[in-house]
Length: 282
Image (cartoon, rainbow, N blue to C red; front, side, top):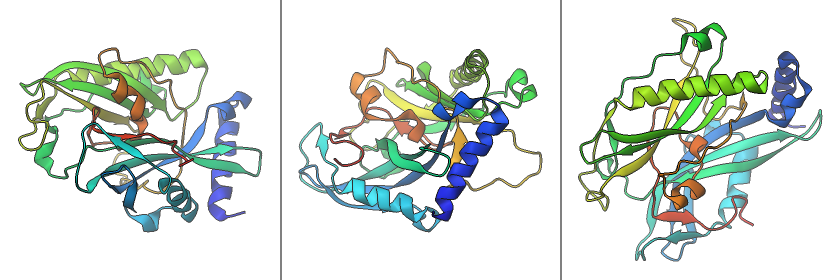
């Protein structure tokens, strides 16, 4: 068994034992976020792709991505006559099969809208982080809230909702629901005060509004401890349910995965590039 496989199984089983609940293995996930770029031809086929910091990513994961990407097909909202290069975000999930084995798969993906100029997209202007809820700190609860924010033409927030909340600790379902709501509420209240810079170049300059996805991470870091680089490493967490955002366009809700957006970044929810095949390339 490869070393990375053994570590994933060990992490899931050890974390399950600490949680003291046998059912946690049904909901706990070990996953990692892999980012890169993808070049899509006008006919929707994949011409090429790259993985960021590929030397940090386990070979089994890069092999999985390579095997899947070759079968991907995309659809453009409008015809294009040139190669389209865009950002690619992939969530890789490891699921335990038994005490010695697990399977890995691409569980979610988000793709950009082409154009790599900063001025083509919505950017942060003033983003004050939310306060960490006292009860969550006292209970040692951490996690990530994935927001959808509608930005108006004044650069302020017209609407905001929590699409998903993942926790890094396990408890009874009622406890987890309580803390998911707590972190979501804190994030929403902070986001209402954010302001944004609007696109000044590209095809979205005249849009009446912009829907963007924003992750908000709550981490219980020890004061003075160096920030850990988790890219290419497995992280264990409990995924929360994905909530319907009524005012978000249906295609934006269906074609992108909220938990594929890296912490501290921002991603346009409505894009003109859509994956039409399964994530495994079949």
